[in-house]
Image (cartoon, rainbow over all chains, first blue to last red; front, side, top):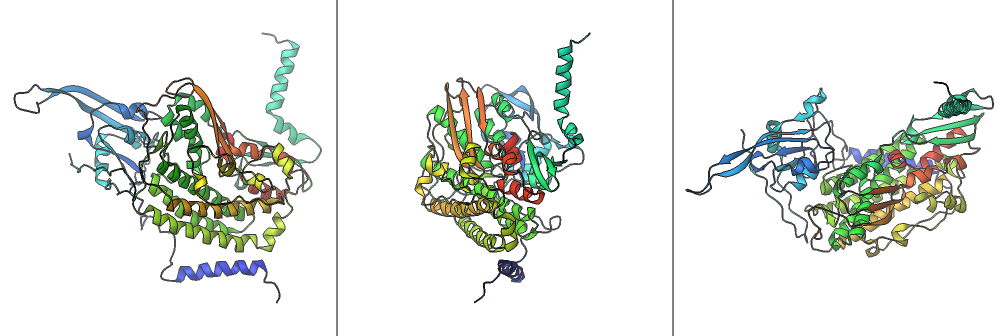
Length: 172
Length: 391
């Protein structure tokens, strides 16, 4: 029996792939993007959302950021006491919380170091701007991203970690 | 101000060195050709200046440095957890593999060992990033040689590997998932089953590649006997990874000296070598490497122990005084970090030994007397990533 040339065998592969895409189980592997959006996974690092109530302006995120793109300004104020008859508490009120996404490296260190769970990752990726200065998101815009934060996924069997809770979005 | 004669001469010599390329253009013997800085065969911005005699290469000299980002110096002003963000970007196709040796060096200095579950997951992600890296090489080699199809196939199946990396770490290209003393997070539910399906796909891709490209007569004619590197030359130029295994040297850090913190010993696999040392051998070895990687991942997925993924480490990481060198077998070859610590929050000095820089050092030797179209084959089969050369 004569040897089948390698090129013919190779064409068999391309032919089979072509037939596979025509099958109902196959189909195309790409999506026409602006019309159909691909869904990123829940853990995907798209944009950082801020839950303002949890933030105490402790500056940990802004200090740990590798390229220092988080800007925080706060002032001290007195909050009403927790129990009746107690002393008023001194708290930090957040004046400004901004992330400059033109500098951000999307490393996630700020989300990780936050001790009060004020920052969350959202898989949302459509926030490109025409002007680079518009990529500076102030706290109002960062707060709106909280709507897009998905619930934390449960863990694989054998894990000892517990999924965290995402606080409910409250529009201001 | 008047210059002395020696100063003038030194100035002229410096100018001449800067304009070396322009001077070469004006020489009479043969022709000078610039491959790059932007050329599809260079995976980035590498400039190779080639002196030609007709169609034959007299001498080719790589000029790296167009993508130098100063990571060794930047590491000195970043704390240990921040460094992983930077070193992700060295070899951008297999990012997770870049973090691991640095973290292992820091763990060695701090005398911490990651929990067994973290070690196994770390090894799985390491192999996934190897697949993402090498499958791009396999597709890209086809594109260099004029076959677009395999490029599309490679990108199609590589996407599934990247999806797995993303769903575990959150980042497709820059995972930043490895931490001193373990991992950032545990795996999400359903990841193991999905990864097994992905490994099936990768094995199908390997079979397709073997039939479509390796068995192709044109491919064989263009790669067999082209760019032969004998074993002793490969050793003397410091080649690592699949390049040296393609020359028949049985050398793999995953088997020979696996640093504590990775669990390759839990899987049963073997190292492939090819005696020829030509472009075909290097491609063949890389293809087998992807196959073995899928097998390693499959075995390790079944062997993930339960438990925590993070050891007890202080919140503010201060690494005690000392120095450590840890090297692992990265997709491109041996990658090592020499970390010197003075007991501070930041490393005192980090020397990064990346594989591609040594791998391209053989380009002047291996391209003597080859023809220009073969040069593209040789460059593609040596497989370097520009970020890995320049850091």
